[in-house]
Structure formats: structure tokens, C-alpha cells
Length: 370
Ligand SMILES: Nc1nc2c(c(=O)[nH]1)N[C@H]1C(S)=C(S)[C@@H](COP(=O)(O)O)O[C@H]1N2
Ligand SMILES: [Mo]
Image 1 (tube, rainbow, N blue to C red):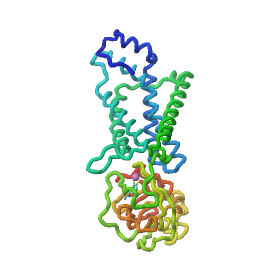
Image 2 (image 1 turned 90 degrees about the vertical axis):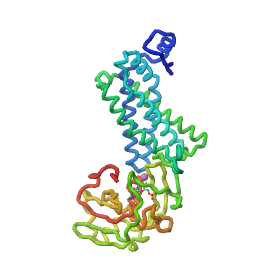
Image 3 (image 1 turned 180 degrees about the horizontal axis):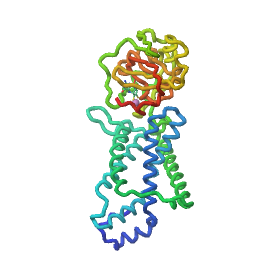
Image 4 (image 1 turned 30 degrees about the horizontal axis):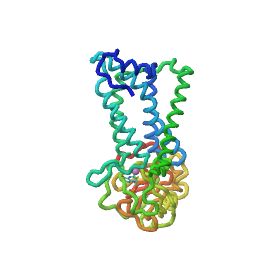
């Protein structure tokens, strides 16, 4: 690490010793490398919440972890850039955004590593532990704003010359080094037997498989458990509508499926209810699902909603029970969606309405707004 210098006097002994050992060619490429890693980490972080399938989820989670850890590899170079900036007259020095940035990146990195180690909570306020992952996401949101300010002030346009062979080679070395750090981290979790060793590909930890009561009750940002949910589901397609009593949905179809919450936990249950395909085709005929450009919108009594491609209709269940017991209120009673292969945010609870709509499923916010 770089010894903290007292001021702009560059000539002292520490500084000269450091100059000899530290990388000499630090500069815009270091900054571009850091920005690239941050963008990869941020992008894969958001994608990781959207993707629910194991293989894609794993690739994204590994890229996310490696990009985050890769920042550490560029630290010695960045230290030189910072040291140089500190020698400039005070008026031209980095404003305090840079210090905030350093602190925030540290919080994001440490909370990310804690989560991957399997830490359930980092501290408790009034008995509810705040998950490391919540700190990670919260600090990232603040980081995005501060980083925006910091980068905007010192925009550096990539040049064609940045694509020479040496740079490509270094990029490869950085990528390999980042991956190696990630692998080393996993090896440590394994060797020490931390809970993080048993993470799912998405990074989630197991909580309450085959025991719905032990499974966490989780709300997406801002939604709350309703006082009461109706006992009828309104089913709509092509201008026709039917009121379906929830009792009619009981146990006609079953699925053993895994709920993986972006909050960092997962559980597998035996769910029972009725598939969306059966619900719709029984009432409106087989043709109702024929157009692949259509989608199925599932709405909660709270207003929370998600739209699904019609191809999902055969695997997606309106479930009324888990592990042979009726759902609890927290888990979506009397009826909730079970969407195998999709992250928890898609599993709409307290369903009141299922509608076949003529627009495609991707015409919706990537995450619920409620
Ligand atoms: N209506 C509604 N459904 C919802 C949510 C919500 O906030 N409101 N949260 C979703 C999220 S993020 C997850 S992970 C699962 C959690 O289901 P559980 O509380 O039964 O464990 O429900 C999903 N369904
Ligand atoms: Mo979730």
C-alpha cells in the first residue's frame, strides 16, 4: 500500500521508495479498467436478480463476484493515480466525492463478500437482522449516484490506441486474475465450512425446504401483507371474464419447485393448485394460448403484478397449498403463483386476477414497481 503522504512535497524518502515499487504506467487505462469492472459488476448484479435458471444464474453470479474482486487487483495502480492527484494544487484536487466513493466501494465489497460467505445478517435493529445482501444493494444504489458525479467530472474517452495487443493481453490477465480471486474465495469457504460453501448458483442460501413455516416471508420493496385477500380469482381473456372460486383450484396439478428470493435465500416445496394453462383453456378453449405474442398478467390484491409469456402457462401454477398444507397468509393465502425457473419476485402472492393480454410479456418494468 501507499504510505499516506503529508502533502504535495513529492521528494521525501517514502515517496521515492514507493515510486520504485509501484506500477509506473498508471493512468487513464487504470481508470477505464476500474470503470469497466464496476460496470460489469453492476450489470451482472441487476441481471442476476432477473435470471432464475441455474446455469445462466451461475455464470452471471461468477462474473459478478469476479468483477467485484477484480477491483482489488487494480488497487495498487489506482493508488498511484490518487497519489498523483494529491500532488496537484488543492483547487484541482479530487472533491470529496472521491472519498465517498472509496468508502462506498469498500462497503459494497465487504458486504458482498460477507453475503457470499453465508452471513445471515450484519447487524440487528429491533430484532430484525439486516441481511448483508440488503447492505450490498443499498450501498450500491448510493454508489451509482456518487460514481456518476465522479466520472462525469473526469470523462475519459476510450481511444482506438486502447485496443492494442498489450492492452488486450492485460485485460485478459485482469480477467484471469479476477476469476482466480473468486475461485480462491470459494476454496476458503469450502475449507472453513462457512454456510457460504452451500450457496446455490444464484448465490442464495437454503431456508425452509419442505417446511413452508420455516421459509421467510418476503415482500418486494414497499408491498405489505394485506388484511384480507378474496376467495375468488377473476379470469379474463378476449373480453370474457369468469369468477373462479379458489376452492376450485385445489390440488389438480402439482409441482416440486424452488423459490429463490433476490434477498439471498431459497426453498423447495411441493406445491399444489392449478396450472395457468388449465385455468385458461378449461374456460376459454385451447386456442386461448395459441398466439405466442400474447402474455398472461397475474395481479395481486395489493396491486403487485407480473406478466408471463404464454409458453409459461403449462409450468406455472396457481397454488393453494405447500407441503400438503394450505398456504399461510404471509406466503400468499388463499392463492399464489408458483413460477418454476423464475426468481421469487415473479411468484405473485394473494392473486385476485389472471388476464390474457394481447401485448408481449416484456412490455413491463423489469422489476415490480410495488
Ligand atoms: N403481492 C406480492 N407478491 C409477492 C411479493 C410482494 O411483495 N407482493 N414479493 C415477491 C418476492 S420478492 C418473493 S421472494 C416471494 C416470497 O414469497 P414468500 O413470502 O412466500 O416466501 O413472493 C413474491 N410475491
Ligand atoms: Mo424476493
